[in-house]
Structure formats: C-alpha cells, structure tokens
Image (tube, rainbow, N blue to C red; front, side, top):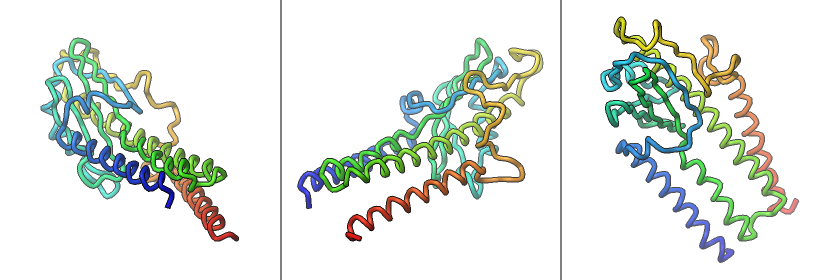
Length: 240
C-alpha cells in the first residue's frame, strides 16, 4: 500500500468523524455560538407582532413541526428573549439547524437556515487517493462531478426544508398577534431578499407529497453518475 495513502486516508477519515461528532455535540447541547454563526443557505424576514414572545410559542411550533414518515421533527430552544434556535430531532437523514432573531423595535423576525458544515469535509476523502497516485487522473473529474452533484442535492433539500420551517414559524407566531399592537395593520409574511421566486420547482404540492419531480430527477442523475464511476473503476482495475 502506498505510504502516503496509508498515512493520510485514516487522518482524513478521522477528521471527518471528529468534525461530524463535534457538530452533533454542539447542536445537541444548544451551543449559542454554533447557532448564531454558520453558512446560511436561506434567510427570510417577516413582519410580526411588536410584543412577540418567541419562547411562549415553542410548544406550538414543535407541534406544528412534529415528526412524520418523511420528515424529522424540529426542536426549538430560546437562546435569549429575542433569539430562538432550532434543529432537527434524532433520526434525520438531512440535519438542519438555524436561528430566528427578533427585532422587537421594528416588529421584524429574521430566520436563517445554515448548511451542515460537516458536509464540506467529505471531499477530503478523495485527496489521499489522488495525491497518493491511487486514483487515475482520468477518473478525478468524474469523482469530483459526483461529489459536487451530491453536495448540490443536499443543499437543495436543506433549502427546501428551511423554507417550510420558516413559513411555519411565521404562520404560528403571526397568528398570536394582539389587537392594535402589530407593526402593521396585518402581518406581511412576504419574504424580502431571500424570498421564493414566482415558481419554485422544489416546492411540495398537495398531490405530490415527498419528493418533487426535480428532486427525483436529481436522484436518478446521482445514481447514474455513481454507476458510471463504478463501471469505470471495474474496467480500470480488471484490465478489460
């Protein structure tokens, strides 16, 4: 076995494991700095009641976002009177975490959803193969394309889920407004900079629960790419 590969591949695996475990522990312990900082993949702002008490809505929010056959449940924790962190409960195939921050002076609620940072460590696993000379340079573009496609698919799935969570939060807290104390006559849940376009191909519909057509197509493409890489490896190492 190549000496360089023997040294670097276990190190890359260990880094991935440590990063994933560290992120899982920070999420499990509701570490404030972990939920306040991250790589946002979706952010929206909503107009809400001026005297909104975020923590008081936690039971209703968790009820509205409870676990189903397709989705993991969402748990909430108040980090401060104006900050509400959320993450998935156990058993999720696509972890999510984010933060809702209230600007009480302007009656505005900003919700951000973050990319699960451990996903960015997976490409490190191919570096030992490439640097150690165990991966043909001809194969590298296919592997890179596959990893990129998987990462894009993951981000799209997370972005769709964040949109559902954000809209549910807005509907829940907006329905509790007190007469005469809202920032506007009626709450405006229209997203600003990060709002949905007029047509969102990832949005679920009543007749098509679960995967959308675009998600299903992306999964088929990923399977095809995986089979192509597997076939290339088989032909390369079998000498056919």
